[in-house]
Length: 217
Ligand code: ADP
Image (cartoon, rainbow, N blue to C red; front, side, top):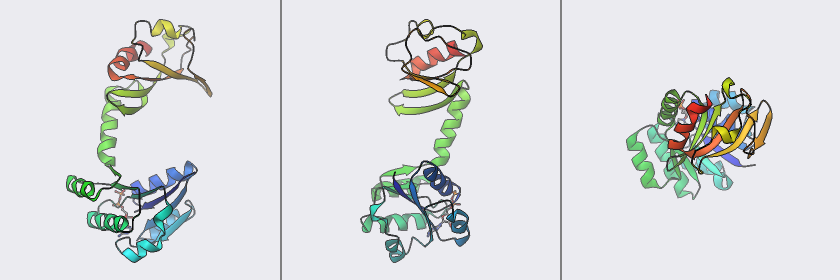
């Protein structure tokens, strides 16, 4: 179980804090606005009203032992940057920051934060990619053109084995698992017979995945 601090509880910060709680972590949620702190207070481990541009207020939060401090002050670029400068000078980290502009990204890079998150752009790319591959339920990009994707199997493949469907596909394309209702088969054998509504989770190069996807749907 990890320990995370989320500073700035707008839509992004609150969602991150609640999701971390759901995953079983301990979360300190901080905002200047008492109303948003109150709204989250009984759903996170600790909720504190503080202005993080005030160095001593930040120091009092005792952020030294946290796994990551996520600065999610959206519109207030100045407050976000001042907070990062204080965190750095207090030797606190790793620091992840939500950025909303290119200028902010440049400065955060110079300040040496550990990760800069652009939720709007990242979400926009995800939506665009999902729109162009509607058969893909979900995916993770691993970089270098490699993806893990989840695709549901069509009715017409009832009883067909994995080896028949994947015949001629590159060796680097792997079926990691098959989900059938609540049952998960990890590393399914070649003779695994598919059923309609099975969901395949595959790992491979985008080019190979593009090739196999139409055969499954
Ligand atoms: P989103 O786009 O994710 O909704 P917002 O910009 O609306 O983000 O929210 C940012 C949050 O950060 C607000 O709840 C605001 O009160 C908080 N915030 C702004 N300045 C500070 C500060 N100096 N210290 C702590 N929290 C702050």
